[in-house]
Length: 516
Image (cartoon, rainbow, N blue to C red):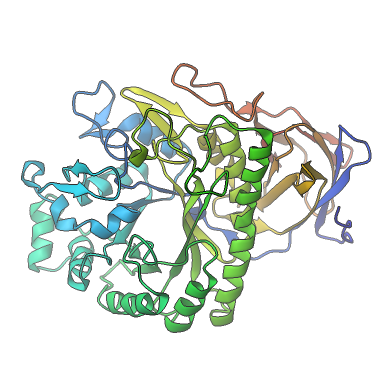
């Protein structure tokens, strides 16, 4: 148990008491003194040419009996618009470094076919290419984030892709875009310079990659109305040396962001990651330990970045994160299809709290992945569609997008399994442009309700409302036969008691409160 920090003016004191044990208390102190904004781009998504993420997900057969624009599935578009996804990363992932953009433009029947060597060895027909992706982003109202091919591509290829999309000149490549049906430039500003260059993107050393980045970035030109935000391929998990080399060798004037990839592996063993739906409390606890490592990774990578970029001009871009389990039995293991349980929702809420609390450096992220792959927001089976528990967390947390970050100090009871402990509750808070305060709390303890008594010294408020996401079991899922088993409910566990806020935070739950 951490000591209760000294309270002062402009600080909100929240006293946490466990209903399971009157001896358990804790505090969450929220300061209103902040100049940091939680970027909406933290709530980004990722769509790779992998499994049924694109084909059978966003892009469906013309005969499928669902509402479509061209072959873009519109019930999916509507669901993602509801949670206000700010950006969508494409075409990979590992696929990005074997993708050649010219194969995906022009008449679909004339596009060359290729083998997707990374994901299942299936034939890629290139029917979903650059124009289709940008049409999708337009329908979603989100910004495109394109990962360029550094591993098997060329500087000229990436340079010409940018010119094709962003220039309004009379060059041959621009005339080709106009011929293909888009007279005006797209003005795509987010560009990844390669993906996982330490691994599937070329197995490079950080020194070699830093030189490659500078070479590619030098020819990635700005065009009128489209100043590029160039994002370097950053470290794998705790490879701090990679971050050190990139920050030392690449100037902040050339690089807008440095990516970080980290997946929560339930067992910690890439060879046998664990089941998405069949796990014990001990394995759940271990999963949450691995999830919480994101706090350490973000803190340590940020500290290295601070050495070279004290003004925080370069964003830490966590553009692949989420839980990665074994593929569901009976499915193609190369398609990475996994179910999505209440455990996944707790991982999502916890991770987003970490990003919110580091929003001075973490300014962009992307959940892996949007549909039918890894920790998906949406699962589909032909015309059927399921919104996962993770989707509902993003729905709850959309209130934090572009809101003022409110710093917190947290002291809570421990959740203990086999003599090992983690903090039972994590949280983040923000204040929107209208003055409303939003507090998101995640109770990782699957057994105990935690009662929160709150003193608010610097916030004028009259009413509290909220939403809660929980279920009877950690292993509960939304299946096609029971698509609404886990869903958002109005939260009745918060009330105003004089000048106090009293909250009963249920076991294994995510709660977001609104004070106004």
